[in-house]
Image (cartoon, rainbow, N blue to C red; front, side):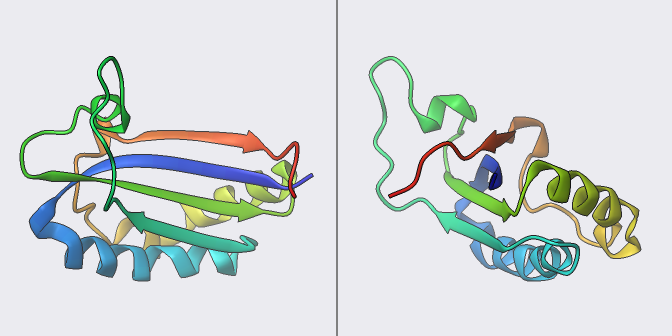
Length: 115
């Protein structure tokens, strides 16, 4: 069953290029260790909610944008093996995150349906 790692993060608007460089360095490592695809998205139409929203989920501050991304894996077992290898890879320690990782939301999901 296909498995996804999803994340949301608040990134300072001025760090768009730094974020892109970060992703271009990190994402191929996941592909090398089994990810089927890695996708990063910069928010462009993310409305503020009245009760909750993506903005409040990541505690977005003035001057920040919401970034969304996902890694697609063949299965949870492939994901677990891939993450273990990626975390042991010295290249993963080389990049400074261009956002506050403490406010990043991350989770793994089993795909249950697709059209």
